[in-house]
Structure formats: C-alpha cells, structure tokens
Amino acid sequence: MEFATAVTVPRRIAAKNTPAPVPAKATGPGQMMNVWKEMEDWEAVGAAPPLQPLLREGIARYGELVAACYKALDLDPSSDRYLNCKYGKKSMLRGVGMADSGYYVTKYIYAAPHFRLPIAARSCSPWIGYVAVSSSDCLCRCREILVSFRGTVTSTEWIANLMSSLEAARFDPHDPRLDVKVASGFLSLYTSGDSSTKFGSGSCREQLLSELSRLLCEYKGEEVSITLAGHSMGSALALLLGYDIAEPGLNQLGRRRSAPVMVCSFGGPRVGNAEFKRRCEELGVKVLRVVNVNDLVTKLPGVIFNEKFRNPVGGGRSSYAHVGVELALDFFEVQDYPACVHDLDAYIRLLKCPDSDDMVRAKRKGAASAAAFDIVKKARECSGRSQRLDAWRWQDAAMHVSHWTSEAGRLLKGS
Image 1 (tube, rainbow, N blue to C red):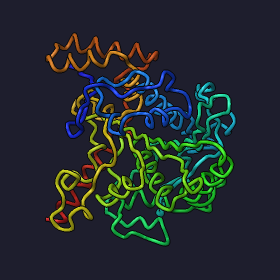
Image 2 (spheres, rainbow, N blue to C red):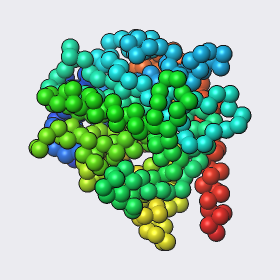
Image 3 (cartoon, helix red, strand yellow):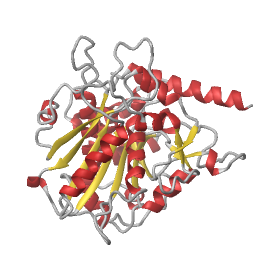
Image 4 (cartoon, rainbow, N blue to C red):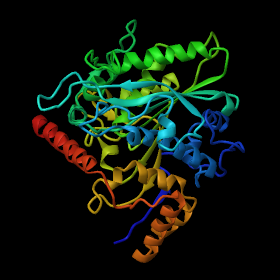
C-alpha cells in the first residue's frame, strides 16, 4: 500500500510567482500574527508554494498548543478531576512538556451542550480548553492572547456534532442578523450554561468573553493580537468565538486600533452558512484551515449543499460554507486508516517535516510503496517522536460514522 504525504495548494487560490516575505524570527509567541500582517495579502498563506519553513513551524506550534488539551485531560473515571484538566493553571503547560512555550495560562474553559444523557456518570461541564497570554520575556512587538480548544471526547459532544441544522447565531443583541446561521450543535456547546460544575460557571461563551474582555483591558496600552486555535469540534468553537469577538467589536482597543483576530483550525468541519462566511470576512476575521484532503470531518456538515453547490431552496442561507484559506495536506487513505486521517498528531508531524517538496514529487510521480514508506519514515524522524503512525483514536472513527449517518438521515428526510 502506498503512503503519500503532501502539502498542496487549493486550486481556488491563485499562486504567486514569489513567496511572500517572512521575518527572520517568526515562530515565537505573538509573532505569527506579525507574519501575516507583513505578507502582501492574506491569501499568500495558501498561495505561496512551497510553504515557508518558518511559517510551517509556527502553524505546527499552534497545533501543539491544541494537542496540550488532549494530553492534560483527565480520562480516569475514578479521578476527582475526571473530564477536567489534570494540572493547575500554573503547571499545565509544564505538565504536558511545553514549559518553554512562552505562554502562561490565565483561565480554564468548560463547555457542555444544553442536553444531558441519562447514562452519563457525571453531569458537569467537561474541560474544553484554556486561555493563555504570551509572557513578557517572549514579546516581539505584540502581546498575544491565545485560546485553545480540544476536539470531541464525550458522548454528549458526539451528539452535538450530529446536530447540523442551521440556527441564527444572534451574538449581537443590537443587530441579531438572523441570516447569519451556524450549526445548532456547535452553538449549543458554545452558549449553554451549567451551574452544576465545580470548576467553572456560566456558558463557554460567557467564560470566554469575560476573560478576553479582562485581558484586553489589562493590555490596552500594548499592541495585542488574538489567536484562536482548535482541532475538529474545537475548530468550530474557535471560529464561533472569532465571530463573536468581532461582531460586537470586542477587539476594538480605541477609535482607530483593534486587536486582529485569527483562527487556526486543524481538521475543522464547516460551522455556518454562506452569510456567516461573508460576515466573518467583512469583519476581518482571518481563518487558516489546515486540512487533510482525506479527512471526512473537514467535508461536514454540508456534504451536498455547500460553498460549491448551494441549496436551490434558500440559497446561501441554507447552505454550509467553509471560511478562510485552506492549507491542504494529503496523508493516509480513509479506507485503510479510518481515524488516523483525522489525527492531530499526524497533522503536526507533517507540518514539522521539512521534506514536503519530496512528498509532493513522490505523489505526482506515482512512487512505489517502498519509496512512499520512506517518506513517512522521514516525517516520523522529523517529529522527534517514536509514536506509531498507525495508532489512531477509535472515538474519532465513531465520530466519522456518526456524521455520515446524520447527513444520510437529513437527505432521506428531505427527499
């Protein structure tokens, strides 16, 4: 079997003759936003092959900060911190091996949908991610506020993923914009509150907006950027938060100053309709979607009606659409590795590997299995890890099946 890996450029983005300029130091905290600000235009991120090494490292760094959520999550049912973080805020990044990340955690975030399962052992909202700030020692022109979200873990989160009907977001009470609609399941996770949890109170949205408002006030005298990163379901929450920040102008620091908002999505699904996409673009929310072309989650919801083929009934208002620029990776085949195609570690490994050009050439020339396997071996060596590439998460496989079942049900219901 042939394992082909590649970094590709979406056809819809026009390639440039020369890569956009990248500063010499680009991968520290608070500096990725500076890189994008200094590029000739936003689409250069996806339109300048080969991907700049420093930019690749910076994107992989955000992937590692998202992976920290999985590593720190307590999955021991007998633990008092079950489905919560195993570490305190001051020691979390150190506990997952990222003591030198240049960030310090300021708040933990908890989320749960509006419904509960009777079979659930505990009903409190699970830990979903964290808010962090770049430390003063690592500043380079800009103070970065980072919010990181993990993907699906619990049964209720899986069910929320299935709730793909479009619902008005209504984030700005003064202008609800009823045409701007998002997936009801993601919206429920983001806006539902839970007073029963002992670790956090209020909805995910309330926790986040309160903390971000506090931090923006604290650092209002500095240049500030906001980066929202997530994997899978966490990517959806990151995009919802990005829109929620920009719509009411929470990121405004003065009459003529605002904190740029950037979303870095890994294996993320579609979140809202075409009006949601248009509004995010109008508000200046920058979105970089890192996707595996073989990952089914990135094609959901909206398998039939999406940005390429709109619903004849309702048009863009009833059709899902991806937001932002796509950076496409190509690794594994879904029929052979059903959940590894969605694995965050695999995404990170390929981003960190410097031999992506060889991967592209190997795929184009139809390299033999032995040569392709050598490429995968190089990717493993580049990551500096000894993890097996075929060690996938079965809960991700279940999520794939659930999504396809949901889409099939919607199509049958509409026929």
